[in-house]
Length: 130
Image 1 (tube, rainbow, N blue to C red):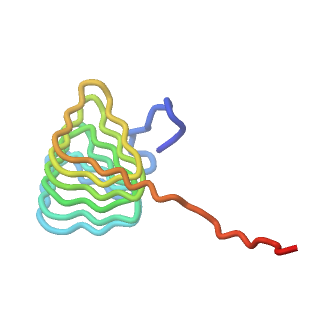
Image 2: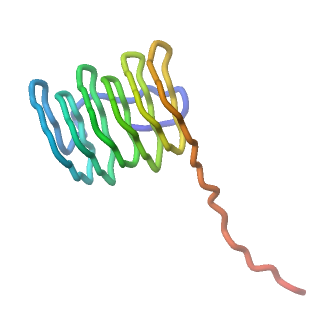
């Protein structure tokens, strides 16, 4: 789903573990571990150790904690990701973000603050005193 810079991201449903389809509305907390694709409406909280896809036409009014996310629909709420956020040209994000990296396509809307939190991964090395 997330590849090298310049590669397109696959928004199809082939590798989706959970789908909230068009015309479906949900209020409450969703806890997921795989890929969650949202084509309907959600209000509440989303916690996932996996990836979130807000498809075109999907509307999410929620706080989100996840690994990676793609927004082609609309998100009203804050997002905390340990990985990458991609806002597609049809996407709209209104809220504060804390992400490792972000890509915003031309035409996308983002209103809020963004904090890049890429943590430096360092190894402790032993030095030989001789």
